[in-house]
Length: 223
Ligand code: FES
Image (cartoon, rainbow, N blue to C red; front, side, top):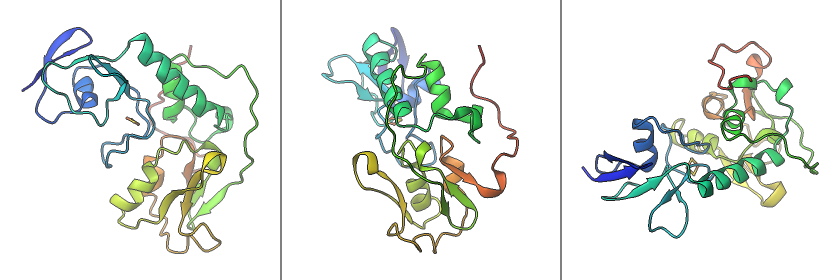
């Protein structure tokens, strides 16, 4: 049971626990996007960064195991600055039409932006135009809302066992593709909806559920 310091408080952690797990056990909020408890670790979004004394860089809480005598700070100015910048960059390339988005107040990105006090960007950005795409017979993709967290890619491979999705291209063109990204790329998709269930934003939705009132607990507190 390594003893570590979490935000100035000495706590005990079980062997193999990650910083994220430890923080959650003690009610400390760390934002995550690519992390999902039912999926393998990916460490791609960098939203969960924390400060660890002695480390020259911020470390990802979701994939870093605690070590004896570790001194962890989850809310230092450097941590918050890094997280805010990450969210700003995500919002900069995000569709931005939250008011008409099917995910609305259930959107994890929106929730994180509110928690970190990141508002609309003060600049206008050119964004690539992308149309809605079908994913099998029952799923609709909106690539303008994708945050490239790869949860859907991992869910398709690890939960469904199909492995039909992948990340392809680079820069502005980077996106989730199905199959070879050609006309019949989704022929093997059974529209099992596993990918829809893990999407943190409104990039994936079931055709039948679009614009139907959602019953989930709203994540964003108004005000
Ligand atoms: Fe840790 Fe994405 S949640 S890197």
